[in-house]
Image (cartoon, rainbow, N blue to C red; front, top):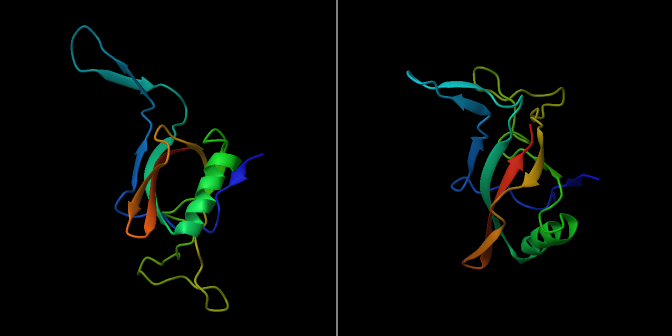
Length: 139
């Protein structure tokens, strides 16, 4: 069974966000000349580092999800892509596309994730908790 990211948790903070594709190349070095590259595998994962700013209730939800549901980060889960999911779709002129009832059409994209090398680290910011961690987004 694949778990779903708790929908009560906020979007990640912008200032801590980074995403980097896994290097899917194999380097070939000859006796002379520049190095060459070939594909190592057919698809690559994306390594994402992010942080969440949580109140006490959201911290409890996150901790239970990581510890109990994901068995300390050893299980896969689905998570809405924070850079795409739920954002309005725009025309080339920058105007939101609307449905027949005048509501904006929202984009949808769900990731399949595993927990990355960096397990969740907790720091305090005022009365809130910052959880910083890494994910591996499967291709």
